[in-house]
Image 1 (cartoon, helix red, strand yellow):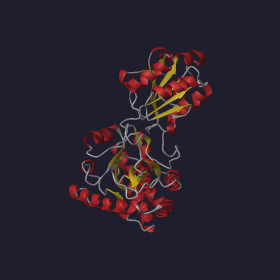
Image 2 (cartoon, one colour):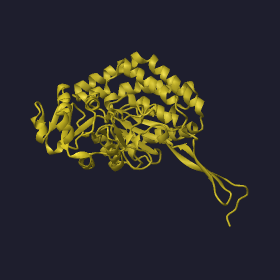
Image 3 (cartoon, rainbow, N blue to C red):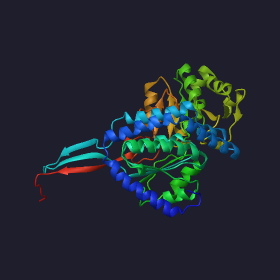
Image 4 (tube, rainbow, N blue to C red):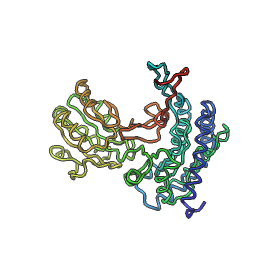
Length: 421
């Protein structure tokens, strides 16, 4: 397939195949879906060298294009990451089948017995940048939840994603499931993104994974429901009652473990009481780890800090940079997060149960944490096996979107010759 294909015709062809495959997959049963995932995991491990060679081609192209260090980190695969993809598939297969779950049941005065049961959404469109592992995660989660999926990976990860996709196809074949259940757009043409966003005839939900430009475009142009977050502006608040040793571990991990992921901390809020008791240890640790700390006021007295610009608060750096500010208690921290946050993930560091309860009650981000790194904002870490993305919307799915979140429901109503008077 060239990059000059007839985009509308390609979209219709892929959409029609996906719709047909979704009908088969919805009734495939647990064991066949599990067999497909386990075989795909084996195929990924067996194709490790081929996947790494494909990734090397993508990395060379990305470096020539001058992609940022954070983007290169997202793109790069090594043996550990390839094996982690395979284990992710097995973890998804080990979860309970989300399709057919009994969500509720009751009997009404007319004698009707009503059940609400989980059903697949149908066809999922996933549009993503850089991270080739999304190919495996998205394919696995859609398959397990009985949905067909159309994957549109980033141009920079095309070779890696195609190599991983071939392993998913091996899994489908081995379980005698339709290969069209997991399709991948075979070209780099960005026009295909627009075609998917307008393909309400074929696609039931769009999930974008990528930077602000991509997600913003999807949210603005989609004629299909979207599960997405625009930015991961994650805050960590060190309360006056925080344990200093815990706080130091968590803050450093939240910022530095991987700076280019959406769960990386982008702003540190420090209660003045903590600062008065323990000094600038949190700031000093970050600077010692090579993080540029952009701040204001008294924190600027800490050697190595940089004066913050107004737009540094409420900014997703995705780099070894963090904004920091002193606040006067939990209510001041909450007010800051409400003003600058993106509704993704916020963490409070405190030993005070009442303060933690206030933080949890008054903030409405998709994920709220206590004494834990924001880097845990991940479906795999939540025990979902994997995630297809993080959703910050208020409807249907919030937080990590796993297999259960890729289902809807229907009502099954049974009577006994029952008529309505």
